[in-house]
Image (cartoon, rainbow over all chains, first blue to last red; front, side, top):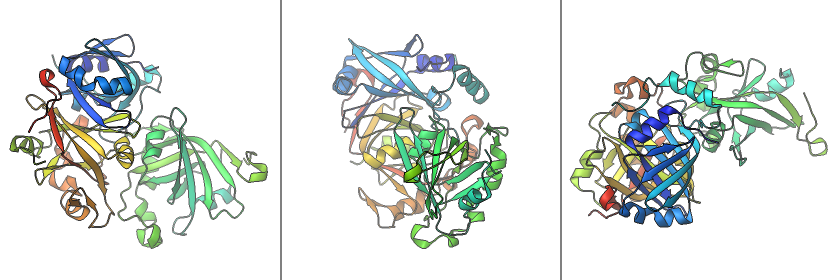
Length: 136
Length: 159
Length: 159
């Protein structure tokens, strides 16, 4: 099971994400939410507006798979992609992350991180990034 | 596991024209992918290297599930071998000391990072010559086992 | 559709760190993928161009489902546009007259096929700078619709 690191959590909570959704036949719709709450090892919650719910509700109902890319400055410095299954509870989008990828441009772009031991993910991060989250 | 001389010959086809192996990988949830590879070689007697030029699903698979199988596709000449072992892709830009099952990325890339030098595109038959050689890196397998894929003895250990 | 000048200006290259986008694609069975890109340009006011440098699943998706969405990831303030439309990749080696949604491989590759010449990666900050650039081609998205992702009006069509 995927487990988010503190760095991942800090970036997601600080700057939110671009959230990719699609119909079950693959027609994509993206929404952007500027903050998130991470709970437990791999649950990411987003508070949506009515307009956002309206936009993706049908997609989530027929196809719960979503992809998250950190937003704002995080899209450069938090080079991760999270994939998982989502559901809507009222206006809360709850994503259970089950895949984590490195998207840093270069030889490790696309490397799947969640299949590594957690300690290895922490080590990977600490040798490639100096920050622990967005600037305060 | 050291490859035999015969195996090394079969896998070192630089400039020889026409040899092909199949590389099979699979996603972390077990969806296999098999592709034909034309640029293949041997590194330090126990690794098989392949130029990464067009890998797509292979790359996606190896990035989440670093194991592969290489089977001799052409010319077979009775060499019905399947090599299996940990497999990854090495690219320029990895840390200096990056190592995969004993193979140091820097050494592998120095030897195999520029395939066009070893095998100029002019030596590749025109119908299978890539239009533009853009090598992304090197796919490398540490051979851990070799079994036969000959129908009558499929799965029998060769080495 | 022709993009308004404001959007064209935002997506055009001025400096490597000027704009950073996500390209979202999906497999044919609905599994989304977001690819960050350090570079973008706009052609004829309606085609968004992105170099294929490290695309993996994006290309796998585009091989089976040719549609994409571009959103500006950074700096995003005030640029809440989601641009959706047919999306394909024009790879080196395609014939010059290969046509994707009205642009030809020849015209795209001649101008954007070696992105490093127009926008050197050496100007990027160290932590996100790729050490080696091996460009396979150019990803092209023809904008068919534009909606806003601003929270209050998310999904509302623009122009």
